[in-house]
Image: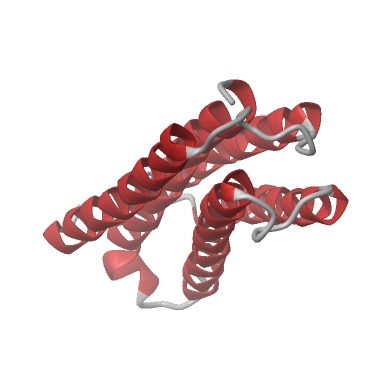
Length: 176
């Protein structure tokens, strides 16, 4: 992987660490129950979406393995499935948001919940777009020259996004 990718992922890690620090600060400073009584998260839906995102990490790993073997058809097949799974994750998150009985301005938990899940969702959308660009580039002749490195970098980003979601899911859905 390139140094730039490592530095960029490190900065993303610090960004999410700051969001988690804000969440824990809000939780520590908030009087009353955490989350508030009007919060009813759909843990079953979130667990299903988590499983889909973890599976998408596996499909992206298979895409990276395929490009290493020179199997561009396999790369395209697995990367397309990764994009589909990421898109289902985003659609599921949008559905969940539409069903919640609280807003970002309702209370500190709402602020933390929508900020963490929203920024994560934006990162997933960014990953989907990056995957789509790489998928499109895989049809070009020049892809054979540096395609494996590009796939490796976008795969590292996708794994990062998945790991961050596992932390978000654990903190917001399981430990709250």
